[in-house]
Image (cartoon, rainbow, N blue to C red; front, side, top):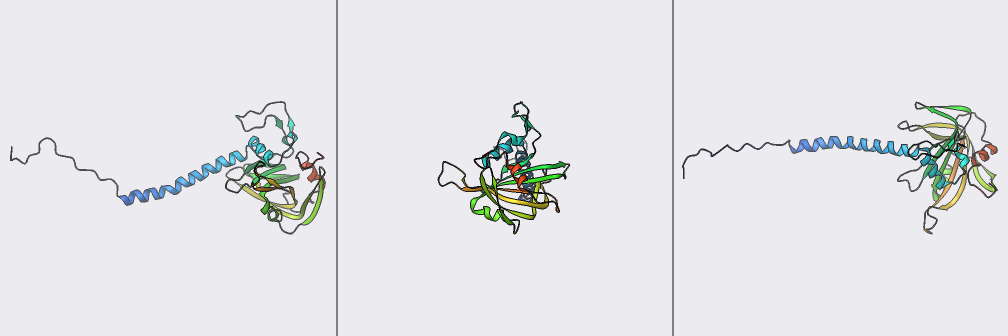
Length: 248
């Protein structure tokens, strides 16, 4: 056995040290908010794309308030292509459905925006002289009263629509939102209008006696101040395609 201190073969290489733990923690901490912002933006874009897809929006609206096909406009004789966002079976609806979906994490709230005479281009919206903005809201029954009165003190009225007496409030001025393309979001509009209850105490699940109950509300307004009041005939014309009462 040799007493020599010489190494046999190559000497072991020194171990490389990684970055200090504080650097790893700090680095990850800086990245996490970025990842969250990306995830939120991606979710928002996906949600908005779904809510502004006419075919999907009409399906969601039909589950809340059934309607005739005439709501979608004149029939073209073509079939809808499930691979596109377009509604090839219809064209030129009087009230295009701009946005429609059930809001996630809201307890079942649904929002549907329709507009006559409103044009959105590059994030800016213009209105024709006869523009009307409609918002149909599905709201829990125990909250619908507050939602109906959310625009202040209105004048109560009753209107017969399709053989059913609907109650509502008339307002000299209502402030609400109009949906624009993502990521613009919404823009405020203000003008005279009405708020009405179309359906009351409807079960979320018709087969479940313990199911949540909801109401369906309508807000119909002009988007500019100084316009004339929304007339009874305009309300009836907007609601004509929907299944409101027995005398459709």
